[in-house]
Length: 351
Image (tube, rainbow, N blue to C red; front, side, top):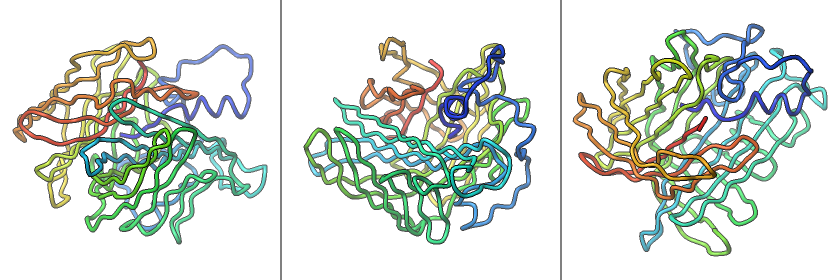
């Protein structure tokens, strides 16, 4: 899942706070009540290319890309690019400084020894950030994700890193959850969620002044909601996995302050057909931990899906892949071993 980090807290930072006592709203405020905004309900009929663009009436959404890359010498890298849109009001957007949308960008590169992360902020309505559909273009400052969905361009830069990648796929989009309705709790919190897990990326990245020519699999997530968490949910552990056998797997574990985690996922076969995975189908167990930014983080996981004969261990390429941003979290590439080889990405929040 991609109910990403810090957006509602960002609203408080940028739109001002009152002096009332804080109300429990779950991790990063994502469990706060959103009665004025459009609810997420089962049965939505997705429409493309319109659903690649922003969704008025919903409080939060994002365009998120990760890539597992190698150069000709076999050196491994990870790339992340995310653009968040968060609405201050449940009304159609207006132009100019009275615009009620906040934009936030995250970008990162990771190697076995280095991790760089950066963020950008923007107010909507003044051209600094946004998303257009025809032609598709998502941007904040000079960070861009653009082009027809079968042939995209992705770029970002900051002190210490930059990347320029081409992402190509001829496979269909994947609707996550139940035909795009992705439930996050037993109480019914949910998002609309689709992915393109079959991208192949190639291009260049630069880390600390050294440039590498790279290629490898990439994954796009698109998600929007108005209240994706409950007030009791303290964080999540999210996986996107590229199996060398051709299948793709998305899993997430929504941790709660009280009670068992909510666990679900999607099995995606090599042709793009999907199967919803329920908690009883999955065993997701944290293993070895590392001390990262003063926190104990599980950087090694055991994943078992008996119905698919999957029994693997994921290991972080760089245990120190800490996103030291306004709202910090862990995100980085992982290697797979066991019944299936492969690679993927892991995000952990709320630790």
